[in-house]
Length: 590
DNA sequence: GCCGTTTTCGGCCCGACTGTTTTCAGTCG
Image (tube, rainbow, N blue to C red; front, side, top):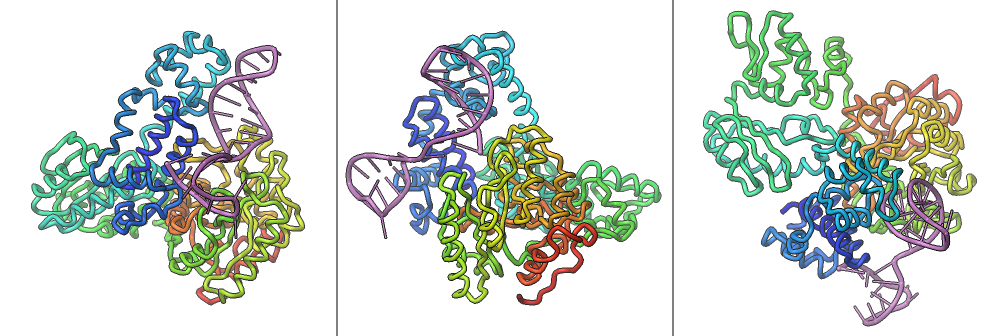
């Protein structure tokens, strides 16, 4: 079992307990453990081998036992027993926004509703509205929630799919006579969510590959199985497709199965215009002679283009840019020198202390680290007094570190519903890094939310707008605001927009990154870590930025601390619009 | 279920908001 499987079982356990009237604090314990494990990059099986499971926050002796049971047997008996009492469709109803355990339990017990379709029917025919504390407006709200839910279902977050795909790749690479194995599809393009896993293998002997794939322990059900194409459903529910081709076709097949659809159509059309035929087996001339196809470079070269990074292959101008020689030199994770949004245990629900964060940041080669705990309005957030003490302590510690890494005293300050900031401006102005974020009143209308954010940016003390859209993948849609106007205010006041690398946020989105690039507003790629293990999540943010065509020069935390401070010091509020990001990053030490 | 400078029992965030009510229930962050 992978971490994601354990997290899913614990989260489901929380739901089951809640629906069957379990102890609410026990519910919360399961839910917290599930959330933590889901974000944990290190495999639980490894921690278990080392006897370190109970070192994880929110995992005590009991949950460690349950994890062990799952790792050893693949099941969790207590969960399975409870799950027999609750139909899966009843659990699914909890995924609807604004529908909680009480409403689901009521609909289930009183009306016998067992799934989302049944709930929808009961909303339409008035049965739901007749229940106590429900009514016509609630029923309408639930219908809207069902529509939004249907719109986003069927896709899996990248960070759930990627480890499963990588495990399969490792398995297939061990099969004899296999030349190459690669992930293709939207997973290779690093989309924030994927529909399925596409794997491509190059070999002259397909039989053993197909057998290794369909017989893998991760596989729950074989949906189709032939010599060159197999489809399976994994235990977690995700579908995986395998294609097997000869090595001479590998590049053409990799390109074809990487997509996206619009990109492929555009490239094939280009081939046709040049009297060529392009398919998954290679590039061919009019007489059917093979011109290439063993590598992707050969495919692109045959149609007169340089290789295009997978993240750009969406058919949104990348062919034209390749033709013109203006493809971006995309930012890489190695370009990032520091992390500007990190929580410590000084506030909030974060679990790691500053020393542990510093240690891990040093191990990852970060040159600077901004500790940005929550402000007053968040639960256990810091008020002005405690924050000032916290900042003083961080600066004292920074002196002892001698730049390994540099420690910045910062804050993630709430943007209150009226656009004012949650702490006094004098205090904020004295900090090294101020991230301002919306954490409340998400329902505000477009105009109100836009003005709220812009007002915060105009305060003159904000360095970074944190997770600008507020979306949570698969859970919460972005709130409504005018990105263009926010970018205009950001440019005017020298504020960078964050690409939050928490894999369930990825906010700015890839598209919004491209809009920010066009507006000449720099971004920062930050981990929003709540534990040391989150610091390595920056790669997810880098992929999102790459999908948004961003180069290192457009990402502020590719700069040295000295350059960063210079960028923040000058010019605040004046001149930024005329001269966005004028100097490239260098490797000079601060 | 977890957790511990109030430490092995007893507490665990709590207020805003919405829709339902006429003082409250449920959901969310």
